[in-house]
Length: 623
Image (cartoon, rainbow, N blue to C red):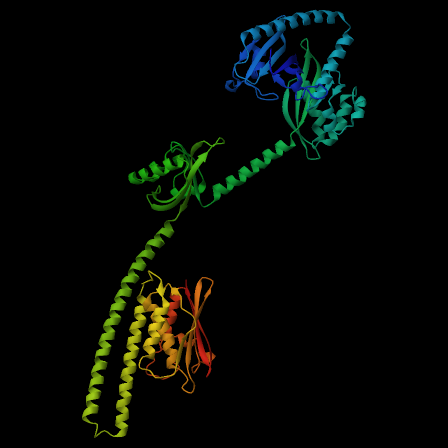
């Protein structure tokens, strides 16, 4: 027939059992590997056994009854073997190609089936005439074949209470040496049970339960038993009948330890994660492709105020959102159905009418085949944070206005303070001019003191205004500043009209920095001027300007050999209006402004100094 395989099923104990096959189903000893046992009505073979009519299946991939044996094939032909209209066997053949079998082949197999039936009828007549002992031996041989090929542990007990047969798998399961099988066959069942029961956790009810089952005479499937060594067994019981009368009991044991432990582990993990989901502070909601709510956790219920009964089965957007926001949510749902994940903010209304702000992370939900069946959203209530942000924005706007007002006020105050100073200075000069000849030396000294105080006051007012402008300024650098040009102009200004032998030394070309020119000039001009201003008149002075790269920063150093600073005064020099000398050209605010500029930009400033040796200012500016 050109078929790929052929299998012969016999009807044994009201089941269809493979007892013959072609080479592909046989092992090296010509025994059937993994012999199938099929109930009536199961699979194509079971359907034929039930209907007693041969069939051809042209495409098994479209037949829900198809059962895969050793491999998947696309064509199948099956015919029953009937004896006196009673099913006794099935012939089943398969082929890997679709539409392989034809009606002629079905007719041919039907003829073979009829021939087998006639032959069997003849053999049965002969068997009826033969010795019943021969019939019993044949039956035992068949059972032995079944037992040896089965991976399940099987045992047959006679109706009289003796062990008739056990499989090798049974011996292995209960750790009975194979060579002791002859001692097992014929043993009294009660004695065997007493021997086996010590292996079970519930050994006191082991024998009692077997007696209950055999007395009931009904099939029992998948009864679980636990062994003391940790194994878990599944036990089946099937009564064996002949001519309507019970003649034996068939017991089947399977080791299901791995399956049971896996199911327990899966159940434990499922409960654990379900508990986590139910009790976490993030609201979780699952919807189908029609936006109908399928599930919500406790946190979501608390967040929105609705009960699960008020949510499940309804559309969330229709409950929690107004019209415009519903349209927005529909777009988000559509994107999820297209397989996209998203994170967005949404304003919702709780059951009590309170407005809440939620941060929602949504994504598609798929089944085991990767098909999108809905979406899952995780919701975080950010209402409190949202309110804080709103307040912060309001506070920032208010501070901005106040800073602008303060800056404006500082300019007005500076102008108003300088006006009377100029008047006093003018009047003092007039007084001095009109009374030069009449003023004694002491009075002349008083006038000089007043003039110096006026200059000091003017410098202080200018520095205060400068500090205010720095504090309120929010201007940031929009482009890189060539620092070399700025420093060159500062040095040029200081050396103009000066005949001093003071040396300004830029060790290497300065970098391009991320700072506004105004701030850069304030920093470098103050530090370079201080080095020049506080030079030691007894020696040739110098200032060295150098820099290096340091982990994302430019680190600058401005070193002089001037009068130096005591270590105890290191922190004092950076405080506002603090001076270590009585010079009238010093306001005491310059270094404070420098520190403000550098630290507000993310840098830092420090000094190293020794009295009468010199001072080095170090500071960093981010690249």
